[in-house]
Length: 100
Image 1 (cartoon, rainbow, N blue to C red):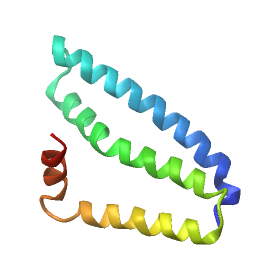
Image 2: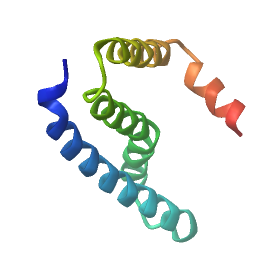
Image 3: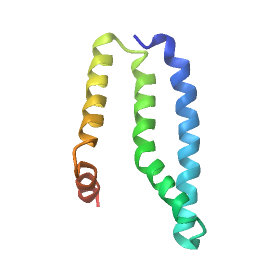
């Protein structure tokens, strides 16, 4: 199903990984020196929170492009489960509180 998209997922994953490293580095430096304006900081926080999920999805899709149809369907179902539950009120907050 995704065999033709493998290279696209690869390039997209690499770009997302570099972007997330830059965002994480800026957020960590900002935690000490506080040089980012609030608007930019809020955007970076959203990128930090949801960017890792997007990166996981893209890398997973790349990995599943090499697998058979059953594994692709299972992965897509799990990915859909994550996305659907993110729309439930309080789910993400509860997840963050469990991790802390």
